[in-house]
Every structure is written in structure tokens, then in C-alpha cells.
Length: 399
Image (cartoon, rainbow, N blue to C red; front, side, top):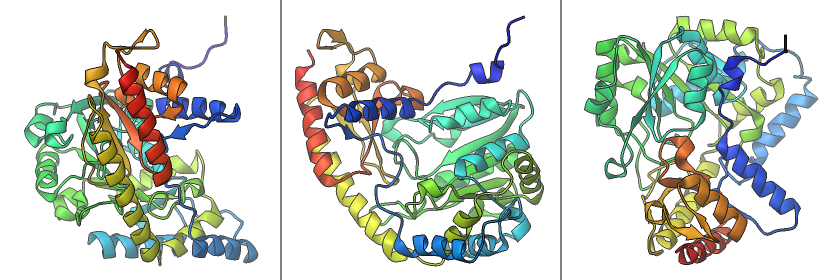
């Protein structure tokens, strides 16, 4: 009998984002000038006061195991942040710290899903959501939004997909990949559906601090005690404080769910990195100036990228309200040829663009819409100018 891997792992789709990034790195290693618009992380360095806090943690000997669900110090700061920014009050036992927000998401799904439970996911959506749902034994139900609605899903359309098996709804605002921000009116409609039908809401708020044009973030958990009791809020320090590699995320929610997530984590990774936890606690006490400056720079980059893309005949894009991503509609190019090869969808477009013009973008097929590619403006303005110029050349060569 041949030794095999599990069906669960066989069914996992590899991340197309990482695949494009890997090929771009190969080309760079060959000495080629690749412009990358695939990045899912800020390009700014972690602020000095946070790095200094990590050094202080080392000097103080904070190198041992911590409680599985996180240090008291960090949980104190998370409590203060949620109350200050989101008007949400939680006890320490309502909070867990994990190795990144991604682990919080998987922990949450593992804690609430039984085999066959359905999870509603408005699409386009981050590639890992449906994969994590499936890995946790659930069934992802993708509900497509449209560019006309700024990629959001009206409540009545979401309601049409609710069944007796619906266990949860995953929300991501600001959204990756679309940059859309869910307003309080739509969130309240979603909350009413969740309370009426009795399902959880997993609210991924990792891009909370990146909202443009005076908009504001609203956490669905802040809309009333009923919905708060059914919501698992996911957040972290990766995007706001440019700490992606530090791997600190956190979740706040119903006590029984957080307890189950903690038990699950105790047998997988145990505690998050002790030094990074101390640095994250210090990060949450400050950083407003850094985040303001980051937001201003991202705003300038967003406007530059949008204006340049909008000037290219045959392409359409939607101005994002948050995060640092832009969805580019390539519908008019599907069926055309470039270098003798037909562009049949976003994968072909991204591959041909990378190979011929050395520009890396992410095909949106993996996000749920093959008519788009995603561009990240977490890169310099100079690279945006050069990269979008190359995209313009590429489009002219399609015939």
C-alpha cells in the first residue's frame, strides 16, 4: 500500500499570490528589473520605538513561554485599543493573541465549525478564507458583489444564501482585494440577519487604520449587544504598524469561543512569540503619527495609481476606500492575443505581463472574479509610475 498525503491537504489550492511573488523573485535573481504590485504588506520599516521595545524585551529576559492566549501586558493594551477605537469592552478572558491574524481566523473557524457547516463569504475575497473554511471542515459559500455596488453584497442577496447549515459570515472591511469599506447601514443589515438566523460573524478588521477621504471604520460588534455576542473580531499589528514579520494578531469575542480557540492553539503553536508580544503591546500605546504619515503616503500613491490606470484605454478600475489594493478590470482584453498567446483570463494576463514587461500583479480568479487583477500600491511612487507605464505598453501590444 502506497503512503499518501491526506485528502484535506490534496484539496488545498496553493496561494496564487505567493506563486506570482515567487516567480517575480526568480526574475529579480536573474538581474531583471521587476516592478512588484503584488505586495500584501506595507513597504515602510517598523517604527523605531517598536524595534527598541523588542530590544528591551531581550535585555529583560522576556524569552520564555507566555500564557497560551497572550501576556497580561498585551491583553491590557488590546482591551484599551478596542475600547478607544471601536467602543468595544472586553474582559481579558474574551481575548486571544495568536501568531498573526491568520492563525486567529483559522482558530476561530476550527472552534465553531462542524463538518458540513456553511460559511458565507462575500466575494471578491482574500484567497485564504475559503481554503481555511474547508480545512476546518466547513463549506465556503461565495456570494459575489459587483463593481457597481463598490464590490459589496446587498443584504438581500446575502440573505438568499442563508440555509439551516449557515454557521458563520466572514466580513473583511476594509477589504482585500477590493479596498471597499462597509458602512454602518449595511453592517447593521448584516447584523440583523446574523441575529435573526443565529450565525456567527467573523469580522476581519486588520486594515482598520487604512481608510481614505475622511471615512471611518465601524466594527459590526459595536452595533449592539446581540451582535457583539455573536461576533469574533480579528485584528493585529501587521498592517497598521508595519509589523507583518512580527506575526502578532488577536481576536476578541464570546468567552466560550475564545476558550475553545485557546484550547485549540494550546495543542498547535502554544503562545505567540514572547518578544513580539512585548513589542506589540508598546506599539499599541503609540504610533498615531506613524499611522497618519503612512495614510497620507498611501493616499498619494492610491491617487497616482488610479489616475494613471484610468488614462489607459481598455482598462477600468474602481477607486478603493481603504487598505492598499486596487482592482483592475481587464475584461476588454480577454480573448485578445499578446506575443501570440490568447488572454483567456486573469491568470494569463498576469503571467504575460510579468514575462514580457516585468510587472507583477495578482490574478483575481483566486479572489472570485476572473475579470480582474489586483494591484497593491504598497510600493514607491517612482515604481508606480514606471510599472503603470509598462502596463500601458502591454495593453497597446494586445491585439
